[in-house]
Amino acid sequence: MRSAERELILSMFRCDDLRIIDEVAAAVRRGVHVRVLITQRARGWKEKLRDLTALLRSLGADIRPYENPMMKYHAKYIVADDTQALVTSLNFTRKCFEDTCDFIVFTGDPDVVAGLRIVFENDYSSPDQPLPSITDRLILGPDHSRRRLVDILSSAQKSIAIMDHRATDPQVLDLLASKQREGVDVQLLGSRPIQGLLHHGRMLLLDGKVAVIGSIHLSPPSLDMRREVAIVIEEPGVVAELYDYFENLAMNEVLTFNPAADMPLSPESEDDEEDE
Image (tube, rainbow, N blue to C red; front, side):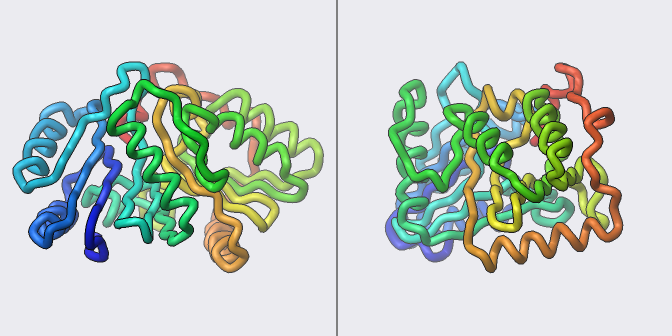
């Protein structure tokens, strides 16, 4: 956020961390055009979202609630100028910065930065219109998230490792069970705490070669009914670091996927994802 010289865009679900608010104010003061796209629906946050919108607007940011009535808004990313961006699973809240296990991907990939800007402009100005074509490094829900993620999982030859406390989609669970029967090593870390932190991050690792990180859960609401953003990572060094992190967790956890145990939540429980 501090690197922005001309424009700063934020896609926001929740925010209560004053450091983020302060950086928005500082960017406005130095002449940066700050635009924020924010959800209109987050469980228990009706008043907070209204107050947050008013606060950011009072600081000089252009802020707009997401206005597609057919789709919930859950994407979380930031773009600074045309040079760098981040895609994340976390909210801009004290809880996520201090108490949860989450993931942030920083990138200067011009195609990703341009793709996020296209998504933002579409959702900011014409959220009822279909998205234009963007880079394959970005997975957008609900436009193509189910198809892309099912294709990625189907391509696994050796291993699938998943961190997702709401991996509940029947099609995905059936696919994981099928891959396991084919001899693919399938591991799933669900809702248990992670080294003293609450589980909130979403990560998919495939064959030691590919990682996917972002806001998307492997659940029906997230795959089919929400604006979500995830990024595909194939840089060997980054993927290896993520694998090392997952394997370190696996040393102290029983993570083998159990298709009989990992069943979908009830529809009522699924709706709790608004907390995310």
